[in-house]
Image (cartoon, rainbow, N blue to C red; front, side):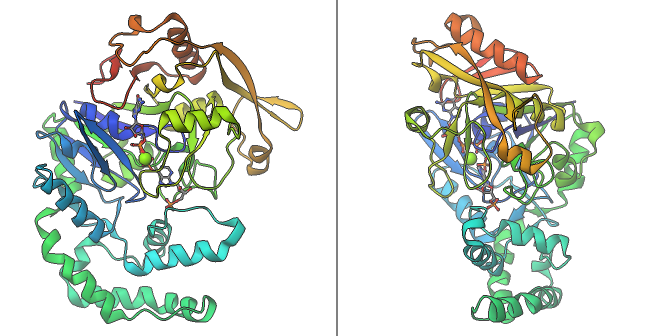
Length: 427
Ligand code: GDP
Ligand code: IMO
Ligand code: MG
């Protein structure tokens, strides 16, 4: 039975939340496998709009069990306030499962994130300031705090001591900040223990048993392929693996179990934060994409940088994720342009390059080579089948599919659940 991975094929904000929610009714489990509350996934159900940061978007489908896997970094205060916010709106969150092996974003990780960015000055990454990088750094350095540590005060205290030992030296001596007291952190973390206890479980066991029982499991990525710590535009990336392999390590499910990998692909491109972006627009077209597409960050409220579709990136996403399908989103936003440029290759130092260069220097020098595709003026938001789309919109989709290397199996024509054209079914 299928285990599906659904992930961002660009720099995040492709519409993963909407796509996950759409499938939520047909799956038994939806699992976040990496990232944390740096994510912002918007889901529109009827006249209700939800902004989810840490919880998998499947939480809005009553039959679906939401899971936060071991690969996620969890800020307990954010998790609890997200849960109570949903409860107030009548959403049942009682089925949530939280991995005891997930790492906790502590208050000092948030401090270190903000201080580091400030001291990087012009070279800053433009992080979301949620403590993501420092928490993953602690995990790799083996001084991280895990959810299960909340249930052993002695171990928790020793671990917080170990984590703060070096950090306090850096904070006081290098950054001229006050030292953080171990007792204060331990007290704050212990206060979350009882509230989180009902959710904590061995999610690896639960998910593998579910797959053995032929249940359908959907892994929902945060961020996107080009923000991947290994495969993205390093160092302008996040500190986890949003790419398909991350689902295996971040949930404890073997690659042989994954049957489908769906890349969510926006019909144009956006990026938040610093870093190279070959098709970025600084003109009225960029402004129009931002305005029509509502391209403003769900987490930080920052304007998203906007540009034309980049097929080089889409091909790269197909390769590093082994994509079986694309879900093309926000096609409706492109309505009204006479011609739509699509980047088919780069020009780097006078040479045409078809594939994403591995060298950071080359990528910084990449200039888009555009092909012009004819646009359309008809409102497409009510289209239910591919045939309902105007001819030029059909041709745009077909051209993107050809260039990107995997079939486009669904098309988003609006933010709502039913504003979707389903071409091949996913389950
Ligand atoms: P995510 O982080 O990948 O889940 O994406 P975000 O939620 O941050 O950003 C995507 C935005 O586009 C959200 O506001 C969605 O409601 C919206 N959206 C998703 N799909 C479509 C679509 O097909 N058309 C339009 N117009 N909006 C969409
Ligand atoms: P969703 O899941 C877009 C970006 C930040 C910054 C870089 C590192 O909604 O697609 P971090 O706080 O992760 O250390 O910041 O990554 N970033 C995102 N951009 N969508 C996201 O999530 C993002 N999560 C992180 O802007 O450039
Ligand atoms: Mg987002």
